[in-house]
Length: 423
Image (cartoon, rainbow, N blue to C red; front, side):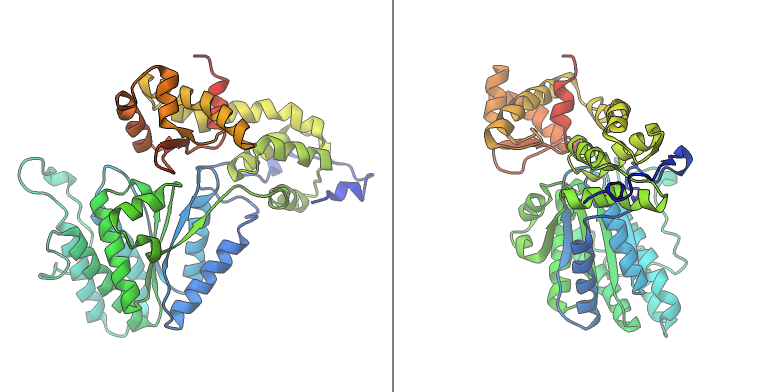
């Protein structure tokens, strides 16, 4: 994208830090959602097909951290809301059962539909099933939560009996989502449940969710699940149900290409009557690698340091250390601090080897996947002895195994960050 500065070299305006448009935040929508038009169009088609009674699959978004999966998930939810769908959103956690959050999400979705339903008794009937489903989650006996810690769903109707309350999460979830879809059918609309960090669901919950989506797709029911997770999410789903590869529509969310990255920077700047020189955009893309979070981080720092428009490559060079320092603390460092000494040793070996793998494969971000056998060899250890560190890092969401026998970082440029840190 050529900068307008090239057409109007005499344009000079001061850059006001107060009007800085960029937003480097976790899940925070950038001022210009560039490069995601295809995903938004695909979801529009999904919503329209379901509205017309056509069969459609649930949707899974996968990608590294910092590529904007959460932002896109929230935007897709807004699309569903604009079509008067009932929606709910949850964030999966490895230490939490699916029952409680999915019950809360469905409660929210059905409350959005209730005012348009002609039979309040039908809504009450579903809420009774929902309450039974939610309350069935509390274990009994030793290890049961204290009374003050037990979740009360805030549903006024009494819990029903004999539906979605068997205690088997797969049976119960199938029945619950089927009943929720029936409510949406009554209203002539649909329900969409959005699940972030979906790779953190437990194995039983993943299996139950796949089974429920399978049942809904066979029935042509107007309820879909839209999940977002790390690149190994498809493998997590496949391990739960072999048919999951055909059950979901997968969309890999990657870094922005050059045109989209320039648009993410230039469009909000132009609204503030600020422009970029072409060399500044070249350097910003080189620094950010096109990863949306980094584009926002470098854009914000550059704006704060630039005295006037057009913003130059010199402004970028002055601002880059501040952006990198902030990323080192908030984006990289906070994750590195969560690792134990043994896990840090494992990641440092990964970082060194990923540089070699990247150079050999021609990768431009030098964070290529690394064979686990090579990591063991570089550390002088047996592969089995490193399994606890590898498994813990996967559980913490710092690395993932995209292909059998290899691991890679979930965070872009994390290997580069580790290679700059003292041992």
